[in-house]
Length: 462
Image (cartoon, rainbow, N blue to C red; front, side, top):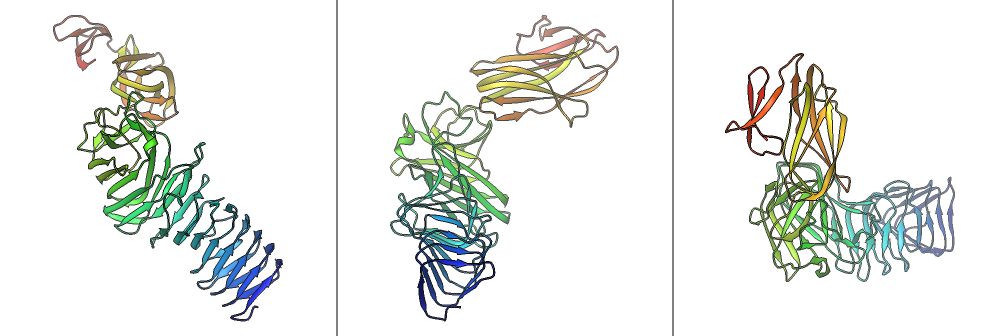
């Protein structure tokens, strides 16, 4: 026990498993290695550790607004850490990384290091993360930093273009910044990549309910996955936004790019967002080949800020010239019909971008599917293309089919399910004619009639 109000300086701290260290309002300064395998309790006192810190197997319990200063490059573990209303400050001169076997769950965490810092595990800061004056970037290194709790918002202070969270290391490692969302207010994500500060601000306008709600964001120097390769004006940057625990949210978003992100011209930029092959555009844009429209978008080329208001869904955000943002693959139709006592599955595409292959899947119950056949895609195409296969193993019964499309980057999407009933000795298609009664083949497009051997016919679009 260090008596209240005293300041004590020592060289090495080696608190064994049976050792107990109690600080109420006192200060303990450790100039060399600190090893804590026992129990440490701090009220409003301070531990100032200036070298390697390792609390593996130990317990550090704050019961008030005490302080723990860590200056060493190596922070092996904080042991079993209870934060209360304490503040942990990284104030070394070389870059520091927080390691531990479990999330320490900090109350306040301050970076006061001109060489920066990092986390070596996913970490929570319940109240406030502070970038002190002069501090540089804090790397997320493939982990998630959570701000706030499921019941109370947390804050980030002191962030700017010189002090921000590195969410992408420019070499493929993505780290994420996560805010718990408890109010209809604005949340700023001061993130960027290894070289550039590209923050995002998100404001919740209204919601139908928040239940342990949070929003997780990262950015990287690449356009959104699935954007058409034919787009010539775009941002070489994207922001991925995912949510949980929000019912019917309505929100605004703005994100900041840097000038070197601009490919060609930014004059006609509009935001858009895409998930797989689903493209959402602002209602006031002239983008073509999209799935739905939401809200109002704009760009300020003076401040390099894209803004989009009145959104209700989440995905990966980017920007492009106010023209076409093409879908990776647009499937016009997918159907099945009887052909020479077998099932013939056919489909047409309007355009293809980075399309690797299709997989036709088959099921006897409409629930459990297996691969029937793989058909190569056409990579990139702006023409209508037709595909078909024959299922020679479709005897009497009801069969279900669906189409899985796979891009070169491995992303997949599934079609709707179609079905056919095949009966023993059922009639077969003997010819297909157009509306003028002229026989046509598979290359014909339009309304056709399949003429069956029993004299019946079926009208369809081919």
